[in-house]
Image 1 (tube, helix red, strand yellow):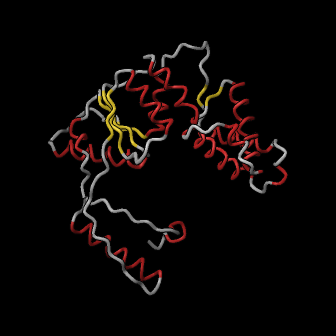
Image 2: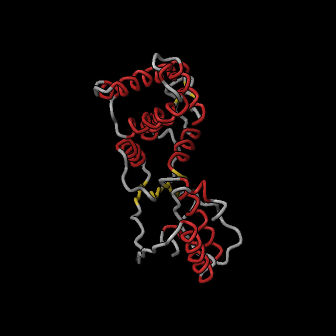
Length: 259
C-alpha cells in the first residue's frame, strides 16, 4: 500500500520530518518525490526528512552556542568505537577477553542506552554483577578521556543540545513532525521539550493502520520456501510495479545469492 502520511503533501522549508531510523527517512523521501511528480512538478524544494541521529548532528553543526571558548568536537561512530576499544584494551579485564572489538560495540551500545534511559553510572556500578562493574569502570574512563580531550559522543549529544536549543542557540524550523517513534525515551522527551520551549511546534504522527490478511504456508524444504516466496513477490509486482514489498530472511547472508 502507498504511504498514508498526509503531512508529506504539505512540506516546506520551515517544516521538517524527523524519523526514528534511516530506512523510514529514505522511504519517506522517496514517497515525497513520487507525490511531487504525481502533481506534475518538475522542480521542487528538497524536503527536510532526517533520521533522529542525523538531525542531532545537523543541529550541532548549526549551533551558535557560546558557553565555552572551544566547543567540543563531536566524534563519529567509528571514532567512538576506537576509543572504547582502547579503554577496554588498557583495562585489567583485557587479558580475559577474546574479542575486544566485539566487547567495545556492546559497551558503546550500553552507554547509549544508559543515557537514553537516564540511568546513573553509580547505579549501574552498584548493580552487583562483575560484568556491570567492569562496564562502569570502562564508562568512567571513557567519559574522563573524552572530557579531557574536548570530545563529545553521540550518547551525550542530546543533553548538550537541549539547553542550547532552549536558549535559542540552535536554528530550528517552525514545525517538526515525528515519524516512526513507537516510544520516546526520557532523553528524547527532554530534548523535544527544549525544542518546544524555543518556539518550534512538535507533532507526533500516529502509526499507519493497514488492513492485514496473514497467511501461513507450509513448505517441505528451504528451497521450496524460497521458490514460493519469489513467485509471491513477482505476482505482487506484476499487479503493481510500484509496490513496496518487505521480505524478512533470518539467514539472508547465506541465502542472498539464491534469492
